[in-house]
Length: 143
Image (cartoon, rainbow, N blue to C red):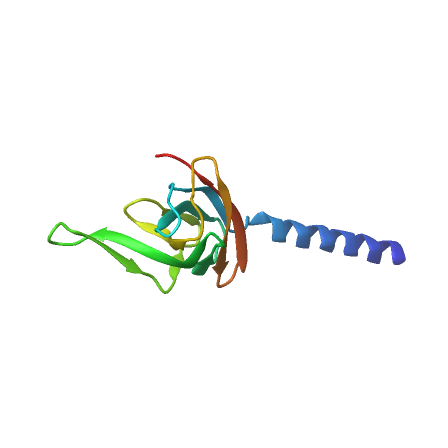
């Protein structure tokens, strides 16, 4: 009888483990930032991949290289001018990805505390509603 119970427990553990690993987890890929000078603004970009079956929400961003860090969306208005607006949060769709790129969503680094030169790196922490925090290393690149 013990052998049967042990076999059932092993089988149940394997099934549970497979179910938990079947879905990937939210990840942040291809992080980069533009060069910038201390006292000015900078911007960071990346792609959020969410292979899970649950949508998530990016709530905030933080980095020591700037006095203030905000999530922004740039878009072209009807009159052809570029507009940039802070975002309270950004929905991340399930089973897809969301690009933070020039001319769209980006992380605004306000009042840079140091120069950002090509080749420099810094840590950016993104806080999500469900996936909690993800810290990524951002590389400064000339574009």
